[in-house]
Length: 186
Image 1 (cartoon, helix red, strand yellow):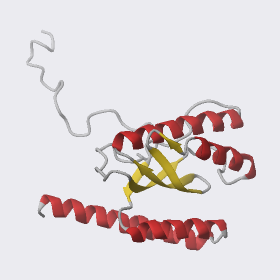
Image 2: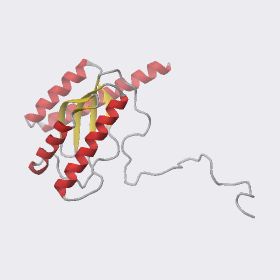
Image 3: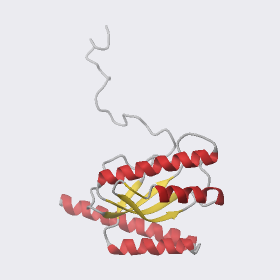
Image 4: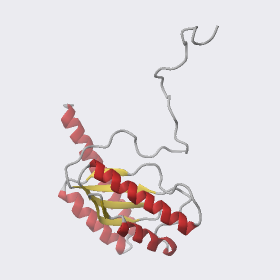
């Protein structure tokens, strides 16, 4: 008797922990739908690179990363307002017309960055780690603080900068959770 004749016991259907697993130790950004944002909204976007990629702030990568951000920074209804390059990730304050413009702009930026960094490192393969994280920076306070963070980074006050970025991200996430709870009625 075949499995199809046995009533498919144990085969198919929704199951706990089913589906493709991440192919590396820690899963990155959630694959749930991104929150909807207002037209021409300012967003705080974080792009993380994989472990094998060189330090983005090092002299050998800094020029390449700067060229990538300049070239891909104003396309498809997507504009980079303020970039902040760290060793293994990049914080961007961006404006996008809508979700499609954000997706196209980030995809173009990712492809351009992968090509340029792979050429520089004389290798091929993935450069960016999983998905980018985008948080709505609707409140003027967040936008002003992100500009201040970029200024701190240029002055090389890294501890203050990292702490301030962590606080801002926590505040943005708290606002986002509060908005979701307010719309669902909890």
